[in-house]
Image (cartoon, rainbow, N blue to C red; front, top):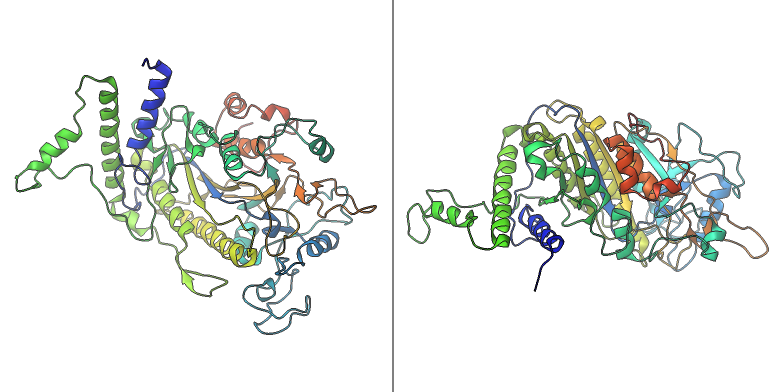
Length: 525
């Protein structure tokens, strides 16, 4: 069999990806301990992007809500139905004690229904969001899920913003165009795997390059000899971080340090009774000789993996890194038990890595963390509410930790954003929701023009025969008005990606005359 140069290069690139991972899912890599702490100062011009991916399709209709009377009435009518209604309570509604009757719904309160949680939390955009056609209101008002209370102070401080109605688009698409299929649409809408890939890579399942990795490609030379740490994941392999040249580096983030498998035993280690055998073991592992080009190249990748692992572990071994505080326990709103928030632990790993940027010589980094469990076709109340509590707790923890990393406020240098497969249907299926399209997302950081709603928050409500017709929904599915390309393009522009590169990474961006939203301060025009 003859192997093409391109095929051989791709195999070697994938071997490199496996051989440099620090933890997850690699038989070639070496486990890293949970990231520790690092240098006391930041590298000049340092910036980091942190993607929080919500796997399964987060119901954004119950995360960021329009609370003006017209919008709320349509929302409540659509969701306060079924065997277990999922409509949240209005702003200002106090929690109903368990066992008592809620005056709004007439239902007896339990921990599993919104009556016991209190009303949604009001947030006021510093710039009014326009009232869209079809909404009968003089002004739009908004609220957050009651379990996102930790995010309200960050919103008020101007470090948190909402991007409204975001989703994969090839070009601007109206309700009529979507129904007639008269414009090109993303492949396999509402398919988990395909839409996860489309959000991360702009193409359906099987995509090989993600926009996070392609952005990271722009800065490999800027990051110098340690550029293997440019794109890092605490959540296993992610196409989001796969670039043309960048190789994602995976680390374990657990509540307790992972068992570290060192790159080789110390040279003085005794193996099977043989003194100093560690030196020979290390020599064998690092042997790059051999007749096969593949063998030589693969061995070189293993050496690089070993050296990178040792370098990172050495950086994390400094005493200051252990001072990066661990996240506190979270009270589960359904079970009322204290629990460790795995998403917060992943963000602790990211914070410690960012703290090491000066000692590692890093100028740009892209991170991927994730949380699953959002495919809530059933029992959405008991499933989504703990997820919202974990998201709010983790993001607030990360904001707090970044405010003082070894004496430096790193919040202006780090932008965190959410992404998900898609949102859910506007109507309930009885006790949950099904796959849909457009969704609302959070952007957090010191360089975010926060306290604002970006994009048009849509008109809410399903069409009525011979009555109300919603221009923003087809059936119970919200049609996006901000494309993922625009959302990501705004982040890339702040990150320093040149416009020509953005146009290459996001070839559909030129189809949107409105350009990218201005939710980032200091972005390059």
